[in-house]
Image (cartoon, rainbow, N blue to C red; front, top):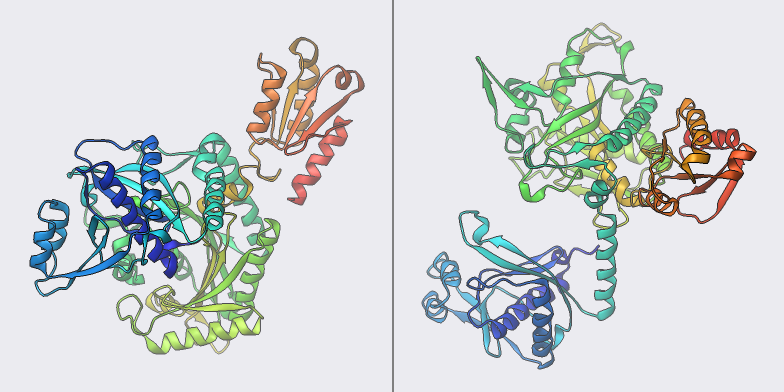
Length: 583
């Protein structure tokens, strides 16, 4: 979906359309006063004070008609430049504009834009005429606190979007509907995957039984792959002493994104935002020879970050999440092979999940930024050159991104384009010469001398929470069989005649470790079949006289209308093969 704010033409168009909205509202509600009407990535909005009147969804049609009328009248849009004194006089009856003006510098040139009988403060630029603002849509209305402060008055916020052509607008509206249908928050609630409750805390999702099955399957899936590659899994605490993060450098570079420190006795602790400091200490706990390396420490680790409330989004962006994290302690000679192994693992996982729309980004530091990054030019030059060479040697196509590195080292990010919305980072792999030095990590080389290892930080599924959100939206909640919370739903046609045989099938599948449900409720057959589809259960079995008498089952696969009859043993084996193949 296009980012309006980042597209120069659409930015101007939407900024102008925000003024068209305000113009129409002023005609319909002469008492209206206006705060701000910025362009956002999804279009524009305007915050309006209607002195107690409430705009409803139905009122948006009336405002739309007035906007179209003004657009059709082809009013020229003219820029005006004012002194502060002139601006204060012009907007003397509008306390919101007066507030804006009084916070400007005395010698600042203040611009306003006029279209017919409407004028408003704005830096611009704008289109030349209202006739260029024909292809718009008002999307919704909500309340918003003045200046975002809950102690202030609630204003009416009207959202909209504008495009250059009707075709572009219609395409975008279709994308919005598709995004709404795929929204993991909506589907997560409907399918019983996760929940949120303000009494527990914003940004602290709780996985329900169905969600935890998906979670467990993903955890087992990635751990099995890692074990085959020699990873050793650990379990570390969710707290850390602040001295741990001062040693790692996270306290200096990441403190604002952490939860506040808690003082207990004579120590200060924080909820950990990442796991690398803990894993550094695990490595340091033992003596290591070069023969031991690479040492691969993995963990499905709970982390906590103080995300702004406005940035929270279901399980895609939360204050508590679990990373599929690992740290590889390697010699310099092992960097290429181990980095390639990580990339191969990423590609293997993407093949299993049919993730095809992605690209690689090499995230580098900004040398001019003396705050964000650990200051060691030699270390950075060596790490970036080495990572660039590794990627070139293993044949990875990538785009370089300046200023996107971790504070301690460059990284390779995998950007995935989902079915709807902007691309997201799913997987990452980072090269780190910095933290091993900070923690004074060593191993004994072949000459008996101490050397400092290099660390490769990597997350294949990223956070399991975000990966599940991605899967929900990609599949619209219709998970592949191996991940589905309920894999088979048995629906007896009649309780009196078919329930005993249905229980026999249930026992057969349950003993084969297939997640099976027996819907023996006293409801009509059609209702139970529709609900099985609504819950997106991969296989629904309809058990009637024919199936009972012949010792067979009739199944219908989700998304199809065809009913297939096979023996119950054949069905069991079919399901087991499909689960094993992870199709």
